[in-house]
Amino acid sequence: MTPAVKAIIWTNVALFVVSLLYNDVIQYLGLIPERVLEQLWIWQLGSYMFLHAGIFHILFNMLGVWMFGVELERLWGTKFFLRYYAITGVGAGATAIVASLLPIGALADTYQAVTIGASGALYGLLMAFALRFPDRPILMFLLFPIPAKYFVMILGAIAFLSAPGSQVSNAAHLGGLIFGYAYLKQGRGGGLTAEIKYRYLKWKMNRLRRKFDVYSGGKSDWDRHIH
Image 1 (tube, rainbow, N blue to C red):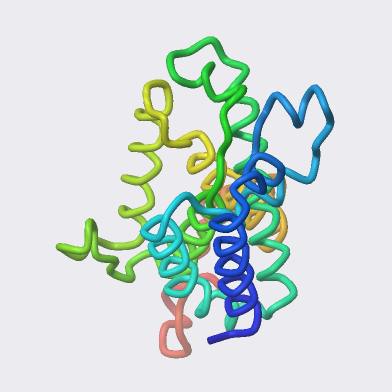
Image 2: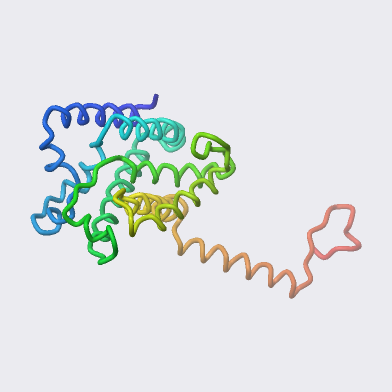
């Protein structure tokens, strides 16, 4: 168990116990778009992901944090892992708020409803895991293995299609995936600009090779290749 994952799990467990004893804490720390936007309870963007609605809710979320978070923290280090977890969790909350402003099905009803759970940040971890280990098998519905890249694609499609008519905060799930992808591409891989520059440079080099008829060769092919 790595330090950040351990701290996250224990914090969630502690606040879960507190919420069982004092249910009002959910109204204060859970994410309610109306209070964030109109009363400026900004802390709810971060505090909501440490609360859960029931034993199975916290059990599966913390199991996911442990399963995917430990390896990522070892890969990145504790500091970057905590930053990433916080950004994806807050980003998922912000996505839920934006979604609550849309006059679409159940989304409009979430404006005054409370959202809790670490699922948004967990989906961010899943995105990171799929980017780092795309072919690593994950058990879909705990039944059959599927490569991580396809696993995350399926979860993203489910979240997108289910968001308008579901009471579950699929918008937050989708937000965790989007913010996770955007942050990793921008923060670790150089961002979209760097990717475009790389593709352009690669295209330009290939064009020059074709123009000057340049081929790769070896020492034994001096008479047949241009170097």
